[in-house]
Amino acid sequence: MQKAYNNFFRDKSVGFPKFKSKRKNHSSYTTNNQNGSVRLENGCIKLPKVGFVKIKQHRQIPEHYTLKSVTVSKTPSGKYYASILFEYEQVIEPAEIRSVIGLDFSMAELYVDSEGKEARYNRYYRRKLEKLKKMSRALSKMKKFSNNWYKQKRKVAVLHEKIANQRKDFLHKESRKITNFYDLVAVEDLNMRVMSQALNFGKSVADNSWGMFRTLLKYKLEEQGKYFVTVDKFFPSSKLCSVCGYRNAELPLSVREWHCPDCGANHDRDRNAAVNIKNEAVRIVMA
Image 1 (cartoon, one colour):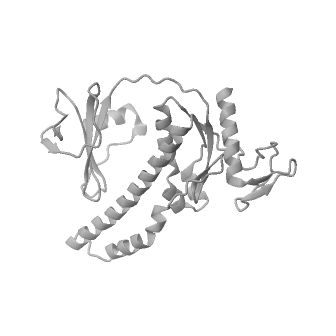
Image 2: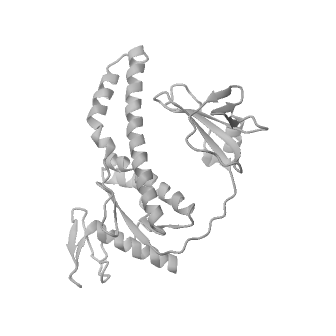
Image 3: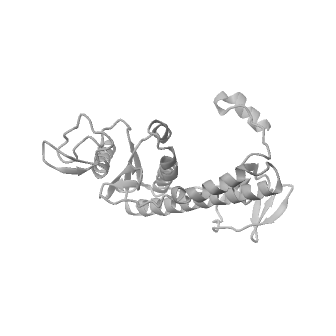
């Protein structure tokens, strides 16, 4: 609590400390490692005032890593997680740019790349939407804070967690596939919150989780010394002809294909935008 107040007085944009209620969906606390108060031993983690707790450790920690802190959190589905922060030194050599790809956001497929390939996103939220509606409707009709209400609430939370895990799994695999193959990845700097509100595509934008996908791409590229470039959101990627540079004055969202009057090229809207994003990113890096 003292740390929260110190942060608030240091920078008002941090916000006033918020009361932690057991009614909130996400409960967590963070503790620092002081003289071995937090450590990993024999498949257990030692926490201050708690002692050793058995855990499922998903990766081995190298010996030269220094444990700094741990954040213990409880999800609405009743699962506990320990997120452990380590400090280590790593020298990253810049990679030579040999392969470049541009990604254009697609509402249906997550993205279309400059080579014409699509992510083929499975739209996990949309596929579970009807089941989610039925479970939420049943929850709303139960007496609040009753035993049945808590049981049903946990079922809804488990379903939400499953959808989130499916989405994360897909995004991690897709981002890893791209970052292992390409040295420079270019995307458009879109404001997804504004897009979801202005175009009334809230559920579709949230289901795609384009922001998370960009974050995964960025850190996976940087840890390999590769490059992640964002092109300005006002760059007319869809309106430009990627062959001759002709620019359309207007191009409504309903137009998915168009013909260039200057060079005669036929363009798929998303692939043409991805090619333009790729070319603009190369220009930015080489400038």
